[in-house]
Image (cartoon, rainbow, N blue to C red; front, side, top):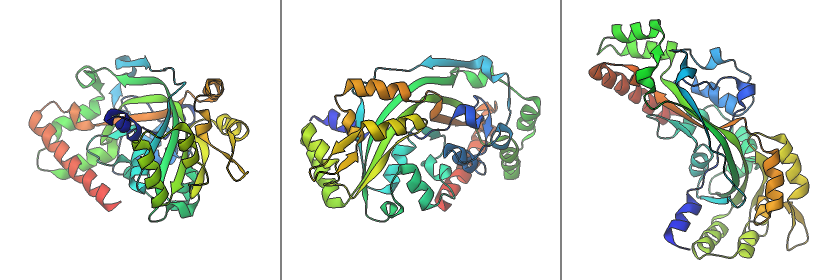
Length: 331
């Protein structure tokens, strides 16, 4: 396997999701306070809170939908079954939340997963609590299908008209008075929703002891065969076989239980997402069941991009950056 192919294997993505029709809080151009409110968005991403948009986001733009475009990003994913290596839990979170970007945040998942118990996290990954302990390593098999991307125009901040109360506050903001920035953020948000992607991802997390993880990793580097890959993904080598989960469709999870059963070398059966490999008929079936209304990518941009005065914009951004970094360190 050449270097580019290895990089492709190691940089594969797996995203979390929130149902747009269920959450009702993902609207282009709305303000979000990542210092206080992002945890609430995390609740919705985990699907356990039915918030209204007033609780989570703020109305800051006059007719933001006028400056929005929808791009069809559906592609033929028949052979795009991906394997991702994660040497630690931080990497697992990085991969799981890869589609979620927050300007100024180094690790957005820290904001997304604040106050999350290990039990709740392990449930979301489909593995036992004990698999979240120290020393385990992870492999993710995933099948991703983005459908459409909703984004603002490239010159959105120049075209869009802010609510008059917000533009007035920007004008009245005095450089050097930090509380004017933090008060603004609390009331209107630190960031705004610039774009999001709808679709679905089916995934399976497998947990390994280091010795078998390293064996698998070296096998991939040496271009191991499909049969070797299937064996290394089986209970013969894994410490825990995670459930096959969909980020948006219960129908997929039911289908998986009856269609992706594999017999192990020891005569036991187990469910493996890798059973889709080179099975286009199964891929077509699972695609038909996958969701197309779950958010699998989200980009939040800093509110300071709306500030017209360069010096004031720089100062607002610096204050926000300090608070975001401090929050990340303390989580």
